[in-house]
Image (cartoon, rainbow, N blue to C red):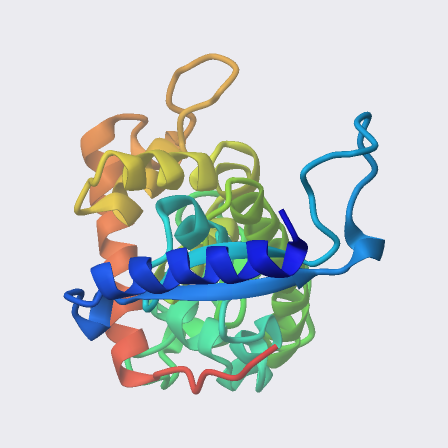
Length: 267
């Protein structure tokens, strides 16, 4: 058949199809897209005299406003977005930083609104008898409470990066309260926070939909992964005592955060 006649014949067929689809609502209308395939775009075939004409018509039926498929929708989701606040924002201000106020509240060295208690200026650690200074009960040698805060804040900032790295490895983002509790746990017991699995337990608590997931994860983090036994002699080495202490610290952080909200900043 002559290519021109073939084109006209096909056009009549399409026109008839369009009329047949005329009952469709505008929200589900079918769009017909005509694509003229030029000779240079026609792929070579093993049949030299194939039925492909030099000016063939390709029909593309695409329903308008069609929702994305499940696969397409999932492909657009950011699995592990970075927190909307920079780590530096947590530590800005040294002794006046959010970390110093919230962790200090859990330590008993700061009031809920960020003020200073008598323990901030120095106290004896009830566990080992060592002299503590500053917001974080620092006991590794410092010239003053402010100096103690600067030293511990530097250490905790590095540990915060490690907490985020561990969370990112599991493809989830820490909330501000989860992160502050991880930082406080790193201040209280670095092994529990970074090597004993706070992030692992928190991830498990999320998957199990445990309401008190942060306190549960903090408590579980005191289990020695090598032995499977508790490793918190200062807290009695049993669930009730450890959980009660972690709940107390969690409550102090939550209340302090309410009084000292973080002004979120982008990275």
